[in-house]
Image (cartoon, rainbow, N blue to C red; front, side, top):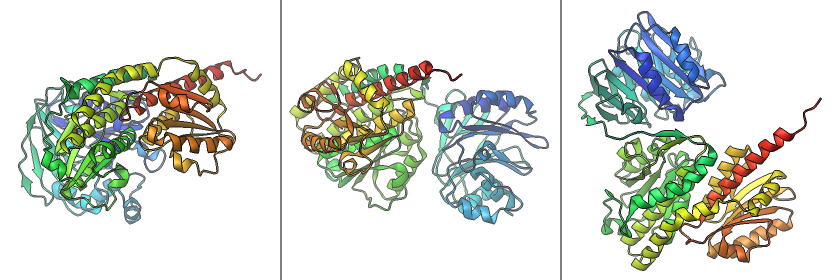
Length: 587
């Protein structure tokens, strides 16, 4: 995934481009670049790594025009090569968002006279080789040659204009007193634009200083309506991991107060009638990273309380799947920011098949919220760095949504709902209690220090929790920790002396089977750190370390356990740093 930002107007472009690119760092961040149109072609500044150096590099740009494009990306094809973003020659400058799936076959075709090392290089070659002169037609023709439907923006050396073509990842066009803007997300436009519109897949736009012209997939001019920029403050904060940990209980409290009022579920704007829910034949959840872990957790809850067959997939896999979807299918797309390209592609596929789509995200101005038929949004500032709140917020929201759908389907009774909402109200306190210091944490850290192999596991919703725990262990401690379903891990030949297992067991229906599998692996030399509830922990106390949390109810029990595993990762990271400081220096 990359981030594109472009500007054309009456002001000097570099400042606007730097500010817009800074708001898109979460989409790339490894390499950054700005290209400005000048009198005799293009002038560029590019850096690898920290964007702070890009401002210094831009000092060499002498902007004689008033338009430019900027891109933040990751090292995608060849190490070092991706630093040339945006790509430019004497004819065009281009930025690309998305992956070109037929990259290698097109690269062989365009090898001479172009050096092609990145998707941007390849797109630049396609634009330069084509005999089409009109830029809107050129954009459509280039897009037709590229498999994977990447979005891109480009400038021609022959005119002062910015062109863009939307692919799987949408692009936003904004206008204000200063000129016209283009962005991969709406958030960077909030402070500089008065109105905006969403460029849909297959559409092309030509931006001039004072107007925007739109073209459909057949390159015919179309009119698009603009909406006022929403009155919303965009927060992006950077927390230390220990600060993030203590904010998790606050996130749970905010989700509860958002969707529960007067002991009743209130999903404003979610117009799912009883009849439409009863007609559903399946529910499909998609997400990436922590959002996938939340989706998998939600799938287990939906199965439990709705009696509707539910399935969870990683977005990057489901976008290529050929599974059956129809108008009796509900696709729930989970994304904390609401800008994940693969998740957006899944939504497009679902809508093309006639399925209903529901966005579950923190932002009502995200691409995902605008694209889906329904949107469930919880308020939350975007966090740079290691964050557990996205998982907590998404998972709790999915739990409450499951109760809502189950009630519409006649499965959740008023009594069950009343108890569940009471437990949800207490969840913030349960999470705060789970991360308090106790001797079990110290024992678990000592066990982890000597681990040769490390796995996280569970059954059902507990497996979903283990995915998030493994991710945080890898990120915070630099330890290779794989999340594996418990039933599968028991068959691994690598489970032996030196193996440490982070086991999540919060469901009483699976506790007996989980204990049997874990005991079997313990006899093979593995050591087990158990995350469980107090009631189950009293019965399963024969393992190496037991980190138990206060019981809530099966819908929510795994969330305090995930918070406890995050605390364990922080303590292990601190212990690693302390050991490094105390390590004797070789003379």
